[in-house]
Image (cartoon, rainbow, N blue to C red):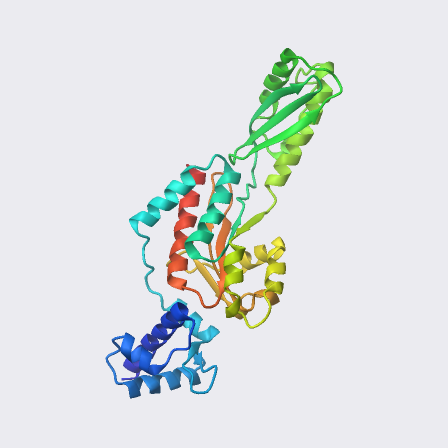
Length: 342
């Protein structure tokens, strides 16, 4: 008997959360009975709501008003999600089509964060892939002027970086081609720490080209160093602003904290994925940062060829469609892994 009562109250709680997320209005017992097939009388539902309120899962914001979920209620709701609703075929096709058009890692990350914001209607955050063994795949040198060349650096992550290099000596097309061949032979496949061991003199680089080659190697090393740093990009700030009524105070501290990449990376690091879905949900005070105490974070991880795991997710008010958001975050993470590891 006790178990059936607990199950019934869990059903009532799920109905309250679902209705409140949809409407943003406190939920009353009559509305629950009218809308949901609970199989019990209105009096029983009122008793269940009173019990849930005593247990701290819901509360009554105003006298004579309905109930709304507490942070504890949202947590219980998320923990009770046994199976996430799969994406529809059109949704899967839309994700794949949108990400397929990316031309490099920067474009792929940009497309991913915008896609997450559009699909979830929340603020989206994507951490750049971290390549602990980032190395040079290919270098290209393009003449711009007699004393200026364009250096194109392609890494094993698929990142394409362009740098302008001013040189003291005038270089003709033959010099640039000789330099391109020599440098690719020297640095292709080398990691950041190995670039310092390259001896230009021992590798047959002429004295005339040695100064330019040193400049190029220095720029390549700087580029690889930048790629191993953690960076995050965000999109959908307007979605968070539109949800401002769900926050008791100003959104200023939240928006300020979003500019601190360290704070976002700490949120990701502290999140633990749920074993069934591979998606993590932290709610309210579970986010150990003062600015995010009224927010929820739904995050996942993705992998990349030769790299370590990186995070992506969405941040929004605790009044969030958790089931749909968890499904979308998990799906986008899997697609991103697929594109990066192909």
